[in-house]
Every structure is written in structure tokens, then in C-alpha cells.
Picture 1 (cartoon, rainbow, N blue to C red):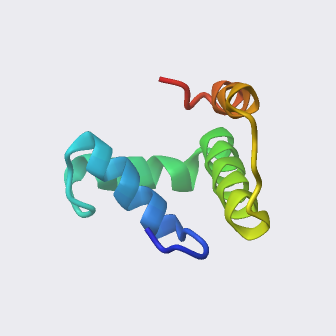
Picture 2 (tube, rainbow, N blue to C red):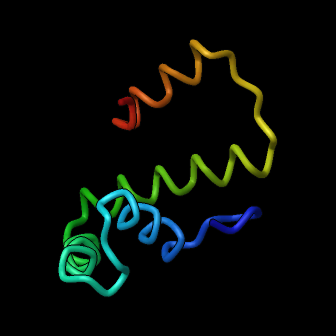
Length: 78
């Protein structure tokens, strides 16, 4: 991913990499189509993208507990 600011393509590639898919694979194309059509998912996707931008732009240092709570709130906790 781009070090300065992730693009939608960067995020899509990351999602698809985690799915073991190519960017133009049927699964990734289906995800992209869903994001284009679903306001809720599109909003969520944008909020995650904005959070990543803030982390990088402001070089935020969070405690492990705060980081964990943020990941849980974003639904990204493993």
C-alpha cells in the first residue's frame, strides 16, 4: 500500500490479498460492485479509509488498549 495515503484501489487490493484473490477476480469485482451499490458498506469503507489516513497523517501513537478498542469498534479485531 501507498505509504502516504491509501487509495480505494490499495484497500481493495488489501482486501482481495487477504481473500487470496486477484483484483479482477470475480470475488473482488463482486465486493467492488457491492461497495458501489450499498450505502452502509460504502460508508463503513470510507470511515475505515479515513481512520487510516488520520493515523498516517498525524502519526498517532495509541496505547495497545486504545488501539485494540479502535479495531474492535471498526469491526477489525481478529
